[in-house]
Amino acid sequence: MKARVACATIALLAVGGTHATEGAMGRSISAAQITPYVGIIPPTPGLNVSVSYINYDGDIGRSRQVPIAGVAALDLHAKIDLYAATFAYIWDTGKGRWNYASMFTVPYIRPTASASLAVGAAQRTVNDRASGLFDLYFAPVIASYHVSEVEHWSFGVYVYAPTADYEKGRLANKGLNIWTYSPAVGYTHLFNKASLEFSGLAGVDFYSKNHATDYKNGAVFRLDLMLMQRTPSGWGFGAVAGWIQQLEDDKGPTADRLGGFSGHSIGVGPALAFKKSFSKESSIDFTLRWVKEFDVKNRLKGEPLVLNVAFAL
Image 1 (cartoon, rainbow, N blue to C red):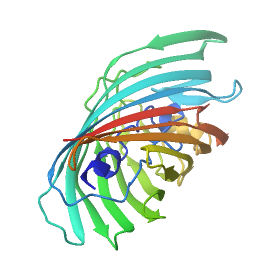
Image 2: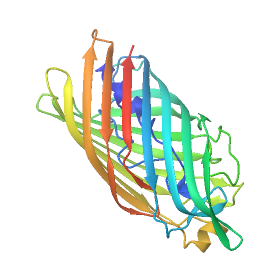
Image 3: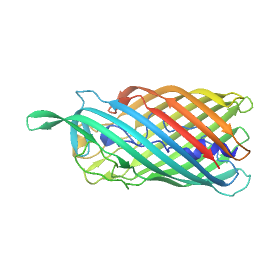
Image 4: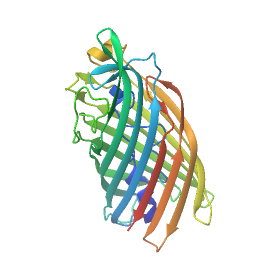
């Protein structure tokens, strides 16, 4: 069971995080947060490491104004490459109903963006790019409750700290200049002698105010689902789905002018997994998914590609 956690609660949300709602996207991306066995922390203590990669290429309609870094832009197109290394330690709590872990993530981001900005009575196209460390991300405590051998829940509060560079007026920033607090609940149910897995992850992202732009993002609810069938050879085939729904309007002068800029999106796509075990306590686990976003409002619309590689040591 230990190997599962590297692809489960330990990697939970590790791949999330691009532009804030202020840039037409939240910390979370459609169907990108869910991972296999998201409800399970196993009882075996030790360090687990995972590395992840997200590629996101999206845009928003030419007629739609988007608040970003203190300005309102038209025809926004953004591309993000996000790399992250997640380190998690499982506490030595034995084989009871509860198990616990702590984690932190070091992300690296390469955003590029282009948009039309108003200069007097004219419009001009601006291109921008950046690269460097993204905002650090951590969870002091993640708890997992084992209802039975096949049913599991996980609970945690995940925190993004504004540690990366930020500059008002830039289309592409390495950080968001805000704190984000994300309480989340995960659930995993195993069927057919654990060969078939259903997992779900629900959470809410709460954002602090960006004092550089006087903009505060509204709270965002997210729900990710995964169904995965695994074979004796180690391969897994399945699907993911995600729903992102803003619960309240954004606040600030720019947000008020744009009617609160509240948004939502839905995405679905296939998922592929492969696991190789080297011993009872060590393994490597790959997961790959591609998501097609649709029914999108006031958010970038794209097709995220997510790769996660987890190591149980």
